[in-house]
Every structure is written in structure tokens, then in C-alpha cells.
Image (cartoon, rainbow over all chains, first blue to last red; front, side, top):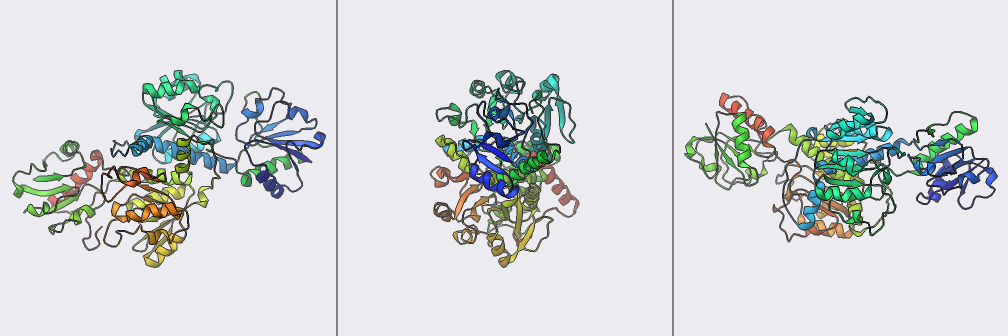
Length: 308
Length: 308
């Protein structure tokens, strides 16, 4: 029973050690040391190269190293086997911490105060209460719903938008195309936690920014391709947006020459909002492999038609 | 029935307008336009100059423009009339937001990531869970207890220290001199929200930093005089402290030449953690003035022996 591990950003040695504890009977092979490809039944991957998965004739299950699966469906030769997302409660906590930090940063005008610190400027700004700050989520899945609930508990005026209708206590829920307009019109801080699909790619665009009140801010912790990167700096410079916090980018690592690094009202973090922790995530992966072997239903399998 | 308003940092015009709504019968006089000093029964002040309050022969009540009263007791000629702190629930919310932002910043290694952004450096750091982060409060009054409760709800390992014994659900409570040693030994982030008294002045010193684990961080939102300023940069540069977030300073505004502005691991904010908002605080002040006129007990009167 062999598993192929492929990632250029996760630690193979840390994952091997964690899986050895979580499921000792598993034979973990780290790419490119595949051995006999016919022995590989499972693949645990992040951004697999085109055709790698198709080269494994007895592959039964693809496991994502992250909560998203867009990096797997990007392979046009992806074989017709089930694909499971990684759903680890510790990642949900980590994402909510990140969103809470960034929304609180925007609420408390920290981007402004940090710029003042660089100039040695002591100026106090009027501070609204949390209840006067309208925070909106694009995406109300496991990440969005948890962060929305925690911000609402701190007194923010929270709303959310999803493809299909949802009901969450204390959160104003919108859905569909009309719902998106209504949501954007009541938004001071917009948080993107959508899955990346053909429908959501490029959703954070000049057209969307224009539908929010002047001076709104955005936080993108979804995927880099949600943002039309060339639309951001013009929106900041015109004042339509007041600030942007970005954890994900079209090209990662973000190239040193990219203007996002140096814009005073853009906060850049290196894709750290909800890092996969092998210590806890290996237990989730091990559980799904045991289910596959026992012929039981696999958890968190993605609907290929929906893409998440 | 006249009230004297004195502050060099609060807006006299905003306070006059708010008090005109909250208690229209009150004759508000803004220093130095005192008029007949004998008519003044109440004084609403921030850092009154020495002898100002003693010059009002019929003064019945001193009202602080902030939650602390150290700026009033600093006057050696303070007359023997009751002094009331300002206790506004909106200020408690604002302080908890600030503490939450700064503790989350330290927890999520944001000081490091922001320094990396300035260099255009894409490096991910291992991220502990909130439950592995020990956050300790000096002071468990109205500010400390609210912030401690909110951080515990987010999964942090929270403790607190107070002069007298307290019991708060979900918070490890310590008190007295022995309790302080025990608290410091289990601290990754230390938050100071103490009142400023002769006993607490200079508590944040090299000697205290040495009693915490190497690499701990501090947040001071108490008073500038809690920190021995000359001890901070050596503790950061030696690695005993990893970072410091400061909202208050011995001299405010912080002078442009002060080295705190430019240290990469010091975050400076201009005394904005919990600003007094006249719209809500004027209702609290109006209530206490009505109580004084009616001979009813004044709320939030300070014990002069204790100093808070």
C-alpha cells in the first residue's frame, strides 16, 4: 500500500514523520523517488505537475495538501478518481485568527498608524465602534462561516455571500448575483474566502470595487487568481479602496520586483493565513486512507462539476 | 450650576456639544474662560495644571476625562473633594479591540512579516496554535478582565495578575508578589493594563523582563510611566524580549527624536487604545452630575489611599 507525496512548498520530511506515526503501515514515497508506479494507490499533493497523477495506473484517491483543490483540477490530464480536500479544524482556527487580525487592523486604522510610525508622526484619528463597521465575507464555507461568527461575537456588523442560500445566526446572508450587489453596497471591509473556480476567478476587479462604498478595504485569503492584480493599485490610488491585505498572489513567491511589496496601503503576507500543519493534518489524511482501504465513504470528496 | 472643562488633548467643542445634549441645564466653561470661579461646582479634566482645581472655592466633584486618574492625583494641591473615573462601556470594548489586535499581531508573527515586506522577503515561519500561546495580563480591572475573557474565548492560554485576589472563569488568576513571579514564568505575551500608582510605576523593567521566558513580548496600554523606557531597547537587542507594542509614553506626543519610533521590533501607536468618545462618555458624566445635585452616591469614585 503506497502513497506518493508531491509538494514544492510543504516539508516532505515533516510529513513522512507525521504519517509514520498516524498510519505506520503506509509506504510513503516522496517524488521523484516513486519506485514501481503500479504500487501507488494514493497521492497526497500540492500543485502536481501536469500528467503526474495520470502516470499512476492503480491510483484510487487523490488527497489535497490544502483546503482548496483548484491546484489539482488545474491538471487537464487529471484521472477520474475521487479528490478529497483537506479539512482540518486547526486550519479553520488559524484562518479565523488571520482574518480577525486583518479585519481588526483595518478597523483600528493600523495601516495608517504604521505609516505614521515610519514618519514619526503622532496624530490620533476618530475611531468608530465595531458595530459601525460592516464586514462582508465572499464565501461562507468552513472558513468564512467560522470567521464571520467570531467577528460578529466581537460586535462587528457582519454579512456574507455564497453561491447557494445559507442561514447563519447573527450574519446577514446573501446569495446569487442580486445578492452580491446588495452585499457590496453595505461593505466597509470585504473578505474573500471563496474557492477558486471558473466562476470566481477574477471576481476582485475594478467593476466589483466600484460597487462598494468609496474607501472600502479588501482582504484576500482565497487564491491569488481571485484578484485582477492590475486593478488593485489604480483603485487604491483613486481612493475607491482605502487599503488591501493580501496573503495569496497569481505568482508565489511574489516576485521581488512586484509593486505590491512597496505600496503603503497594501499589506503582503507570504501565504500563511492557514498553513497546513502535518502534526494534525496527517491524522485527517490517515483517516481517509483507512476509509479507502475498508471501502467506507471517503470524507470531504469534491464534486468535480462544482470544483470545490 | 457651572462645570469647568480642562484638557489639551480632548476636543472642547465636541464635549460642549455632547454635554449640551446630555445635560442642557449645565453651564460648561472651557478653560481659560472660567468666568466667576465661585460658580464652578464640577470640573471635567485631563492633566489639570497644578493648583487649578484648588483655585475653585466651591468645587464639589472632579470628573476624569479618562479611565485613569493618575493625571489628577499628580497635582500636589488637589483639594479634598471626590474624584470619579470615567467608566464608559464603549471604552472597554475599544480597549479590548486594541489588545486583541496587538496580541494577535504578536501571535501571528506580524512584526516579522511586516519587516519582511519592507525587504520584499517571502519566508514562511512555523505558526503555533493559540492554545500554545500564554498571554498574561497585569491588571484585571474593567479593561483587563474584558480583554482576558475575549482572548480566552479565541483559544489562548490566558492568565492575569492583580493586587488583590480575583476569580475569573477560564483565566488563571494570580495575586501579590509571589503570584507575580509565577505569572511571569508562564508568559509569552505580557499585557499591562494596570492603574498608575507609586507601586506600579516602573514595573516594566529589566528585572521584570528577566523573569519571563526568553523571547517574550510586551504590550503596554496602561501608562507610559509603567515602563522604564531605557530598559526596553537593551532587552529587545539582547533577545530577552522579541517585540514591544506601546500606546503610552512618559512624554506624549512621543518626541520625533525618540528611538522607539524607528526600532524594527517596536510598534508605536499614539495613545489611541481606548479614546474617550464624547458621544457616549457625556452620558456617563451627565449621570454623575445629576447624582451630585440630587445628593445621591456618585459612581466610580476613586479611593484616594489606593489611587484608583
